[in-house]
Length: 381
Image (cartoon, rainbow, N blue to C red; front, side):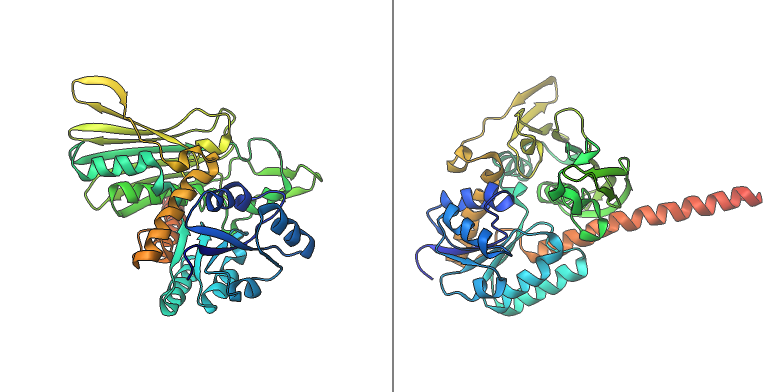
């Protein structure tokens, strides 16, 4: 491997998309990575992406990109149902791979990819970049150092404006189908659960309820109706291994400015991670936005802002900043043979936890149905 790590991006659309908004600015700002190849499904767009992003090579298939000698790291930024095929192409070529979250549609698929990457001996990275926000890093250090004492409880609320109108952009249509694994529960819910565990430790038990409150959407460009099967509300109550309890509410359809707030209460003080007020709606999401950190102490009811140091990534576009910080840690991992970035094992655990949120609702509804049957028959509980 040369001094710079050659990156090939699958899904590098020249017109729009997560690669253009986050990954490419992060790579271009890095001293450790170089964009060597891009791939889309059409020759015209692949060539346009190569020219726009100043890559060396353009491809229309994942296997050719992954096998090219100029590519050391394959980055997967396409729709979730295609992840398993494209990640497999990278792993089979013996290349390191960075796949966006959600990794797969199911925990079984995630487990298979984790095993394949382990066998191939490659670095396998999942895009859980909320861990790298400066406010999160600082809060984690404070909690670890005992600055707020023993954690008693936490409350997380995060909203998105997605789906706040009946007509929605065509590129979002596939996310309203639960089978595609890219809805609110998987994306924002997954990032939320990962952030809670990263800061406070493993979730031991979770009970959740999901709901579809905006069941009717149409494609803005065509008026075609969308069959909505992916929930737009997730409410969960979790217990940590320490005994601390956590409440989580994430939802779509926010008419006001989207926002995130995570409050953590300890025996010696409290912390609050709050999305900064910016016009960009992406800035309110806990994984992509800039979070401010506040603290309070017993006897002082006022929240005090905790100073945070800026870094090179702070000057990047909002969506790219935390991604750039993840890349920076990945470069160190590749140099030193460590794995401090979230990997496929983390993704497998998180997917399994998300599946518990669906199971808990089914179990809850079964209990309710049984109760109603007892009421109908006059039976005793």
